[in-house]
Image (cartoon, rainbow, N blue to C red; front, side, top):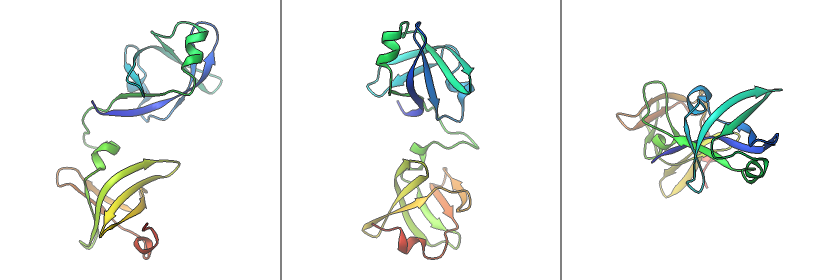
Length: 165
């Protein structure tokens, strides 16, 4: 089962098991709807009981977390949802690994070996015995073609020489 990160529990809220949730998903309506399954890093399954906004924060109720003590045990846990299949207009990081990266003029850059989701999303691209970190930025991406297995990029002059490690 392929999973995507939805967010992280930051702390308990109240006495009945509600938690403050730092949301990282761009699909909260889908990922946090009532009855949606979520998983922690160890594979434990939780079911969304409810979600609400409170003073600029997201509060989350999970059916398996019904006390302050259980909510406290969730502190710091990242929660994930099933990724499903990518469709037109949406791409999951897992779908990028293995894609060939080319420049607009057809030059071969390499193939995506990993994706790092830090403050800046970075593609790790294997090329000629070395690796290169290329920012996933809309200014660089011309096309992502999952069917052909390619990412076409418009890279600034000198980036490939500077990004290798």
